[in-house]
Amino acid sequence: MNYKKVDVVLLNGKIERNMKVEYAYEFILEINNKEFELELIYDNDKILKGFVYNNNRDLFQYIFKNINSLNIPKTVQDYFKQFFIAKDTTVTWTNAGGNSSQNAISNKISIPRKWLELMNIDEDNRDIRMVFDGEKIIIEKKK
Image 1: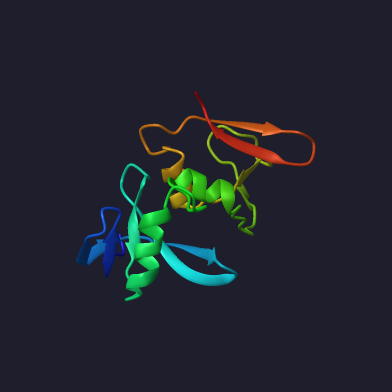
Image 2: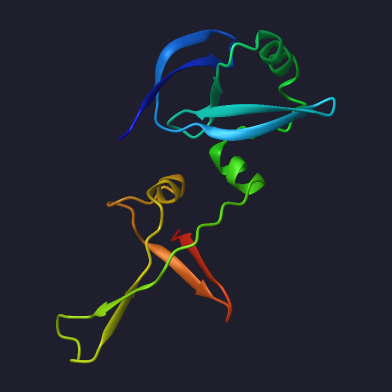
């Protein structure tokens, strides 16, 4: 995994220096008609842990004082519900192989690993359900 080291302001207000972070989620916070760019950090349980520190002490004091009234996503799932992410990709067409007929074709689509991780899909838990409504394919983790 690729990590970067950043200073992180934790939700308790403390600053943790040189914290290893795999991914920071970009977020625009609007306060009094001004926009502030933040990078949100979530823990392994996908719960908001803090923010990449950008030396704006007043901003973070305001955030901590008003965190419950601000529209900051508290979980990674809330983040993706709030900011729909789309990815353009292509379908791969290959010969099916195995016991398939000579002209059989197999189709595959790559799904970003981060999305699968957020859905708790991994090598041990990989059963999914696909729903086709005539126009769209919806992929869900099988329950």
